[in-house]
Length: 67
View 1: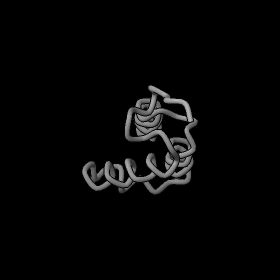
View 2: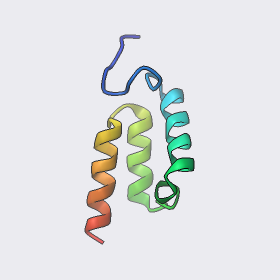
View 3: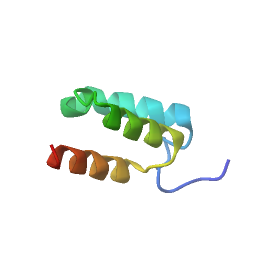
């Protein structure tokens, strides 16, 4: 597995990114309340490595701004 700097040292695998997401949801309560289908799609994209954390947050912010 090659190191991907988009995810940082502790979020290189899907399992690690799922753990990071869980930890961030525990700290940032507004993330835990994101239960829409779009938010879940974005979370899954982060875990799969399709989105970096920064891209995930930007997309969530855009989703919230359009509501």
